[in-house]
Length: 398
Image 1 (cartoon, rainbow, N blue to C red):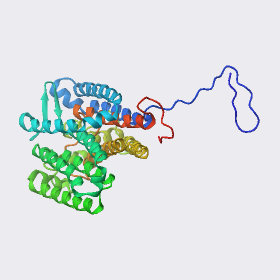
Image 2 (cartoon, one colour):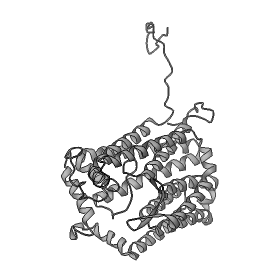
Image 3 (spheres, rainbow, N blue to C red):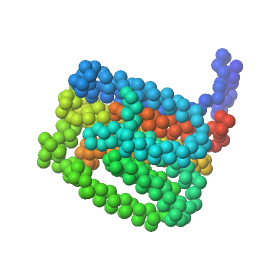
Image 4 (spheres, rainbow, N blue to C red):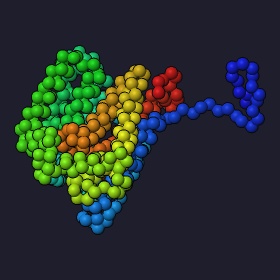
């Protein structure tokens, strides 16, 4: 029997009720809930958006939905495994992961599978591995460890700042040879963002941003197909049956969705009008079927996920755990950038890029890599509250 004590006079004992200390969550519940909600909604939308093409190509309307379900299960299984691995192990493994990433990028150029003019995948029997998705993860892990080991050099010397940029340049070159301009852009901006948060000198950062912007502009105008994409999104209706076809169909999907959408499964654009409806342009089908309400819900879930990632990173920084902090910042920025670019492409405010919507678009490599990224973020949140022996840290911010 316990006695409840509050202000004023003592309260009467409550028979049969024992007070227990409030159990704090071991991981970040809001982040986990947002990620699981996006995975579930993505699985539903992949099934809805791919029914027509799956029935035409395989005679199985739920072919892509079943495969996506398998990818989600694999991603969740690996996420549970990652949750049990201390961050110190990932920090020590960073250089080896990065080296393996470069080897895989080289193998893509040698034995990769070509799809739609790009060689981005390594065929592994029934599945294809998109190396760029894993490489982005490996690069962030390595960069977080590099900054922790050489933080003073990164902040105070040109050499310490240029070393990770040399590695970034080599990776971007390999990605552009595939070609995969979208993955190279996301990787470059993520690395620059983490370096900025690490306290790089302003003038160095400014010069680098100008150089990267100039190089990106040069790459955009050097290839006819990139230049066409840059100009088409400004006015897709100028050539709606050729270069502007995909974007105009996506915009029609947004227009048909209005406030509440045409209903789940009721999309017309997914019926062979909108190319890549279950991959890069899944968000357009979602807007058509679930309307503005569905769009706002998805954006809110991604906002919650990224906000919690950055908050977890800040908590790690306040706890003087720089590797965990930079890892969380990098993973959060990477997810945010890919979401922003994919949604921007679907809405016609950015040039078309071959980037999936994390946790939602069809694709095993993207699903698995993002599940691992979220698991690492949850591990950072766990270690913000508990030490290596599983004991609560006194006074640690949540």
